[in-house]
Length: 261
Image (tube, rainbow, N blue to C red; front, side):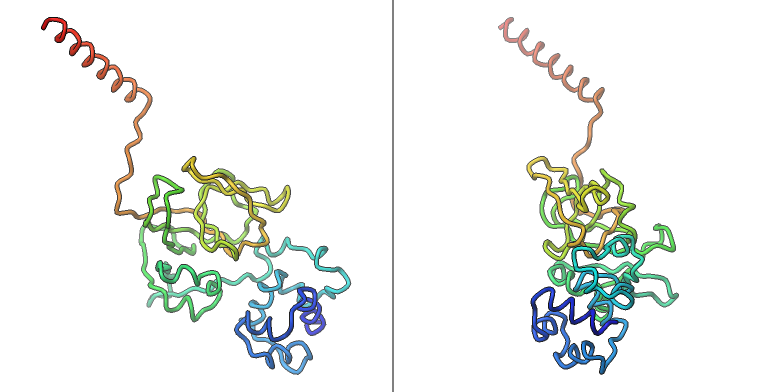
């Protein structure tokens, strides 16, 4: 089944074995072996192929995809994480998951390396004992001023979200996409309506925009951020009113003083 499916998927994209092998970092003879049945892909390469062709591992192994056509292939398992969407991770000496930090220099390559254990293994790693145990976290660099009070140069830590249907509209998330890389936005979940996510900034100078869930690689739920800049204080309405009244009083006193002169 997998040999016919691999041929069908590649030809559907109108790509040669050389092109696909190069983009996946494989030898052409290796890919050819997978397609003609003389070799079986490892779990790691099986995952690469499934993510590259945007199908689930189960679909690739069990379903005659040529009978359905690409447009009719179910994407539900990919969205809810049931297709063995494996996350590469590292652990400390106590076998507890590390929090890997993606340096600014490694940011551009993350969309290609996020599922590669060798790429993840060389990232700086640390632990935060105050975070809930049993969950997976990762820290990303934030570039730009689109999400105040999170300033340019801040570090945002997110909790790995396996089932994207659980994205809560109006909450901040780190979204990793094939097209845009790492983005930190307030997200509105429209997966059930039209298969998209609406990404919004807290800075009104930036327009909201939608992305197809098919372009998404990972979703991380915002946990906290670290910044060298102190956020601007948020005054309550009563504090603002009191400040305005004080200013008005000072202006009135200044006017009276000027009149006496």
